[in-house]
Each structure stands twice: as structure tokens, then as C-alpha cells.
Length: 358
Image (cartoon, rainbow, N blue to C red; front, side):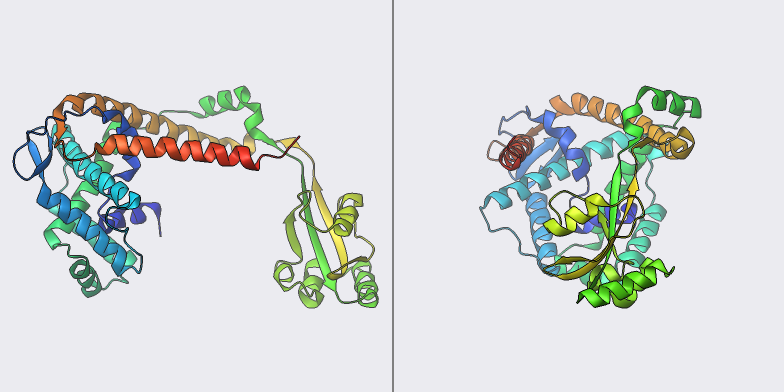
């Protein structure tokens, strides 16, 4: 499934704009007047997000989880609170980008025809082309067809806005060459040692197999024929890149003694008898001719992404004063920001705990 199709299907899980939520953390200073009117949890400009629509989004998402065999978070749990915050963020963001699309005009116009085409693609990619299966899914999750269309429109609208504000890439091959020259470390390919082996039960079998290899038989073909390590045998005996401590001592010692392409003598370990070969690749700098296409593409993608990020930052700043929500609702963006900080701190603690002792 392509990234685009996966993102399009996200409407079925209600949350469409999760990739932008990290950028929305700066909206944590919303007005908390609590005077939004009965049944209103938030206002985006003059548009109210009602308690009914908020609760409906939560119910739909929980139903979607259950229909896919996943457990929904327990009511009142930390996971449930995070889910509620994220869904409220999504409802706010949808309205923000709806208004932005109106200001954008024709380039960001989402027609019924475009929505139809997107839904047809979702049905084709995720429901084996069966519209009835798609409709059953909507029924199971309590999602009305109109709501589904609205959510697909929100997905398409955000994509149109990003395309419009991202503009066309202008980076050239000269830019790529300049970047290549200024960042040599990024194109340094480290030395590598790739190991392959054939594992047999006894020394006699290892000696016989080695004689066949010396006589010119192909190592990969013989591994598939003889090796009792069935996993690597199907990969022509390849074990992948060598890492210190990955193999038992006798095996590692034999690998370290091998020259590039050399075949070992039979090596005994607790697993049996091995014939080992190693491919050594020295450290080298990849030539510009090898990386120019991918480098240029990356530079162009980054150029567009930078423009999109700049636009999104400006949008957030503009909307700060135009969003408010009820005092009974936890600030969803502060919740997200706090969770991100806690996750980062936990990752740092884990890294410190697992770091090797000098």
C-alpha cells in the first residue's frame, strides 16, 4: 500500500491530521473562558465544535478499533485521555484548514468528483474493490456516509494546501554538487564485513564440502544444498553484516582471520561444523555520480517541506487568538506537548541505561 493510500484510509480511524499535531503544540495558550455556550467544547473562529460531534468522533474511533480486533482504551485511562485530546485536536485542525482552503481559493478546492475518486481508491486498495464491504465497515463503526465524505474531504484539503504552499522545487544539480562538497561525512560509506557460512553435522562432511568449493562449485548453491542452518541456506548462506559479539567465539575468531573472499578451514562450534567466507568492503566515499539523483531529489523534497513548515508555523501563529475551548476540557495541545516531552525524557533515560560502560 502506498503512503498516500495509507494516509487516505486514516479517515476511517477519524484522525486525519496527526502528522501536523506536533507543530500545533504552540497553540497551548488557547482562551479558557469556559463561556462558549451550552454543548460547545471549543470554538475555531466563529465555528463551534459541539459536545455531540466530539463524543461522536470518540465513539466512532473506539468502534473502529474494536471492529479491527484491537482493544479500545479503558474509559478514564491515560490512553483514553490521550485519545480524546488527539481527536479534539483533529476536529480543531479540520476547521482551521477548511478556512485556510477557502482563502487559498481554486487551487485548494475539493470537489465532489475528487471525493468520489478518493473513496473509490480507498475501496479498491483496502476493501478489495467491494463497495458493500466498505459500507459494512461504515455501519460497524457508526460512521455515516456524509461524515466519511467530510473526513475524506479534510484529508484532500490538507494535501491541496500543502501542495499549494509548498510550491515547485527549484534546486538544481549545481545545488546538489555544492551540498555534496560541503557535507563529505554524509557520503562516507563505512567499512563492512559480510559473512556467509555452510553448516554441516560433522568434520567429514565439512571437509567434503570444502573440497567441492575449492574445485569451483558455487558457495551459495552449495549452502542451499547442504547447510543445516535452513534460514541462512535459503539466503545462499549469507548471515549479513558482522557485529562484534553476534556469533559464538570460535566462529568470530575464524571470521576475523579471513581475507576478503577467503574460504575458511572447517570450524567447529556447538552448532556443528562451519565453512565460512567473508566479503570485506573498505571504507570509501561514494562518488557524486552514484548519489546525484537521490541527493537532488532529497534536496528538492526538503525545499518543499521547508516551505510547508514555514506556512504551517504562520498558520498556527495566526490562529492562536481565534481558538478557544471550554474550561472543562483539558488543553489538548498542552496534553500532547507534555506527552511528547515525557516520551523524549523516557527515551533519553533508556539510552542512558543501556549505554555501554567505558
